[in-house]
Image 1 (spheres, rainbow, N blue to C red):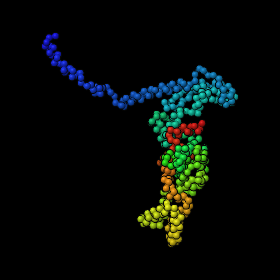
Image 2: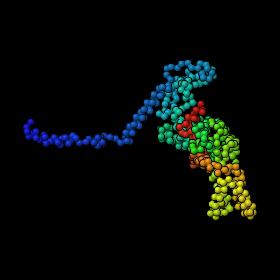
Image 3: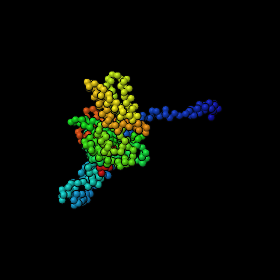
Image 4: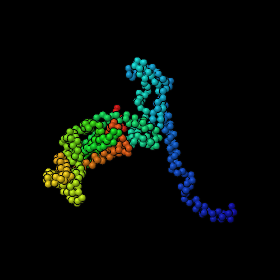
Length: 431
């Protein structure tokens, strides 16, 4: 190599080194090669689709009987040998992967005129056309939305096509167990919360049926400082509500617990309390008490808003101080002093002191406040909304009496045990 060439090469070396030592930007280099998230995810979805198709095919083969083997079978009804009636009859099972079609042989017993499929019995799917996960999904959708919307949501989210009629039949089949009086749930009474009082509330909620408005009775049970409650609903026979409560696991433990029973002034609520838990400490819902005080004050004092507030506040303070009997006496004195021509005012006073007298044993707000116990039945008011009304009082809804009963009980179970255990409990109790 000539000296001139060597010199030229030497001059080029630093630039060469700087070029080779320059950091390599992989992101910039691969920018044109990379795909965005949607493109990558779409390929993943395609692979998932291929997998589900393969899984359906595998399930079909595993479930099917051998096409050329048809051994003798005994009739499940009479025990005699049955004859082959038809080979390779198809049955479709709807799974989370899609439709799975399998083949099985049909047998016929001449002795008792019984047609049956032994393979269906072996697989425990004689009466089923869907897998358990699809049924659980359908029940979850139906208990939270209309059957029509449940059908659309299953199609949109899971590519599962089920008609509204099919879903209705599924719901009826899986809620038959709820029409029995026996309870499927347990009261939330345990050793770890034995020191906490039990809070029970009951009330009624009106639901519109095809013939008229009908009342659904709701009862909730929880322990103090715990939010999870057990709910009971009855729409046909009020006695069945009490049967459900008595048959629930843990009912006998109430005898050894401090029980607080809160409700409004309806006589039915307190008759239920006396029958189900006579040792409970009853308390008239505080907001209902204030409502009656306000109604009386407005009727008597009319537009004197300041005086209305003073009347209610004074009455409330005295009732909390256990002076309810004195308040009643003073109301009666006011009643006697009012001119007989003031029928509205007299009616207001009479209604208030009668209301207080009927509930005189349920006005011990002082004890409840001293112990930090609730004095309002807001929980049962809330239960009307999140247990029943959210599903059963949507626009334009008209229920049959049986449909109202099924859905009311289904909603009570769902809100008690949660989405994870709802379908499981239904199927376990039905078995």
